[in-house]
Image (cartoon, rainbow, N blue to C red):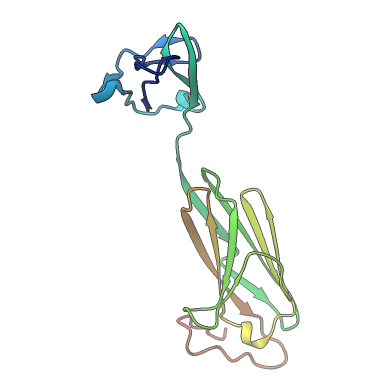
Length: 194
């Protein structure tokens, strides 16, 4: 964190900054003054630092006070279930995507298909694709499963407010019915009859 000097009320001279842990707490003695009287405090975050307030002030006599709090980033995770969704022709396949991380990964995009061509990208419900989001979890339901859905990749991509992205992938498998299901041979997935 850095604390920059501010101008005095007359605007002629700069005030020397000070940095405090808390709003009126302990003055940070390990803060280092760099050029132009900028005060920088470098520290290793600990669990107790989460959302802890810090104050930067030009002088105790001047009310030019700025507060901030520490919000450490948490390593993200993403889990898409099921790994393989089984469905019958005309049925439905449902997927659940759950994320964790700080800032929260709560903007979801669903990518259906392989490669860059012939893929469908969804952030909201469209036709037989029903999309819903609730905080850090997203759901996709594909209705009226068609033969062409067999071995189709379904990817969940989640983004946070820093534009960091995470993703996980699943596949649709059509369960055997009276008619044989012919697998897509361009896919890398192999289906064996049991």
